[in-house]
Image (tube, rainbow, N blue to C red; front, side, top):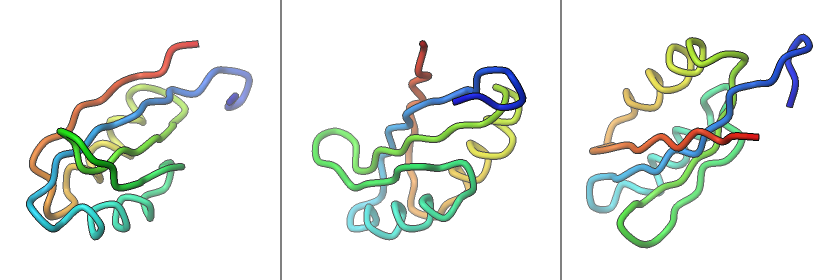
Length: 83
């Protein structure tokens, strides 16, 4: 995706949650602007999300800070997408 002639920063974020919180965490994350996917998964992580922003600074400020403030999240792992 392009934003004003430049590439957006995109990443998948793997999220661990407190027991029984995956569904509510995924719903809360899906409402954050810039998030285009938030789903519960199985395995060592409970939720996967994909998000994008115009720059890495904005990605951290606008998305990661809001994701990490969602109640029930215990750990995140950010995996930037390269093109």
